[in-house]
Amino acid sequence: MPLYEFRCEKCENVIERLCRVGTNGKDLKCPNCGGAKMRRLMSVFSARTKGESGSPTSVGSSCASCSSGNCATCH
Image (cartoon, rainbow, N blue to C red):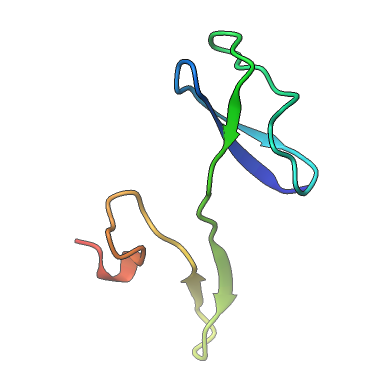
């Protein structure tokens, strides 16, 4: 099962939940305020692969401070 992030529309609390594919959060309640409107967020994921030299490289990773979405160009 994939890990999804949801944000409460009432208090903006963000939670993570393991859910079936396609879950939209209708059955979730905010653990912070009890709000019933949870919105699924777009998440960034990271995959590790071995490069040509045999050392691990990161694919698809990013950080919150990157405007490019690629941490190789960050800072």
